[in-house]
Image (tube, rainbow, N blue to C red):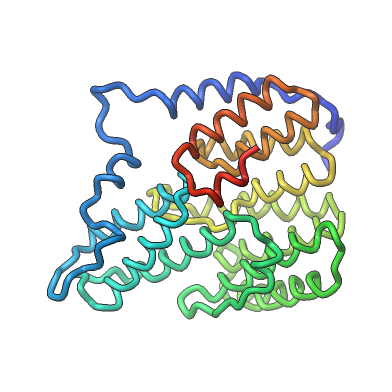
Length: 306
């Protein structure tokens, strides 16, 4: 627990962050090159048109395709993202890709898991069948562990928490084999932190998720292609907010936004943190930013907006 932080403390400099990021995101001079979103909308390799027989899709095209999936997820266009994922899998499986990228299936698995986690339907996700990915054996227990712990936060459901602990045991074995600087270790820290949060062990939760965030920064190659699936700081912020630590939650949300300004889930959480602190003006700015980023989002994504 951080000393001196009151759940009723006003968040500092929130308006400055919201306005600076908002201006950066919403203003596009005519002389500026195409944004990633515009490039993906203009992409000729569209999800509605599967590769024809004999078509050769280059590895560079598929890399762009994967980037477009992330753009669609950020914009709340989850259905288009799902179609793109299906399209890329079929192109890869049909071997119409030149110089087949060995990590493409793993990237697609990450993005599909991110799509599922972003919706926040924890109870449904905790009970959904999850297959084991041979390329990323830590991915399924990460999804199952976090979803089960989050679904059990409010109810303290013993079955859900046991399911989360089972996922944690799997990750502990994978982390021992992979070493301390690895994806399985990061997944282990995240699931253990989510379980600690579900049991209201707040100090343990914060220590574990802070360690996961530090490891996340070490693992991210900063080339724009790494997909974290679960953002440790955002998970910590969610739990702090649920347990009435609104100011501390807001600090974490703003840290996520500083690194990932298109992350609408953090804008939504930040708006709620401000609202619960009684700061209506700042809550409105954050909520407006979330709505602007998801102006073209699917209805199921828009339902998450404040």
